[in-house]
Image (tube, rainbow, N blue to C red; front, side):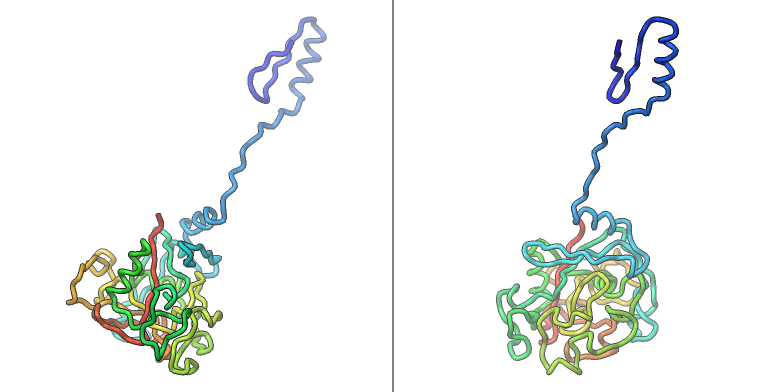
Length: 284
């Protein structure tokens, strides 16, 4: 007689001396039937988020991941730590200090373009649809990102996106190479199509973090060490009595100004033909 105890488990019962012993021996030596299991298959996005939340300690440990949000490509920046600032730059880049991110975040792969914004800024320097939108105030940049349900990147997010946990001097590494950026030596005194210099890509896949146009950040310009909770990342509303950090340098700059640690600033109404922005979003 068969008595079913549950999936994959069967107990054999019978009567009659020697048959009992034989049946028991066969039952003990039988290979148990494997219980089927459901294998969880992660989507590429889920797998990337899992890796990003685990964090990285070297730039080489991260494989760039790009995702579209409402038709705009963004790159995933994993959790991790880096050393913010530089001892080989301006005084406002010191002291060098550690910054850590417990959660990943997203940053636009490219600077915001004329086409995305829907109008042209200073036409003489940036007139084509895929060139960065320039001559933008901080308020206009902030409002555009909010319309996309996003925000400007903070200063420390921007620098981490450019340098990574390996603390590179430039988005592509530690050595200067003007061929990796839209800079004073090759720009022809104007911006270039975003992403046109592929060799300047950062460790997370972001383009033009050095050169082309300076980029607004969310952060108020203050001395280091940088404290994310010291008020510099707080909403300043419509206040004009503040200075906001700009990063990355422009097509008018070279070498020192295009370092990932370099800082500049402007008041929220400041406009400049070498100034644009990109948006960011927190992990939701």
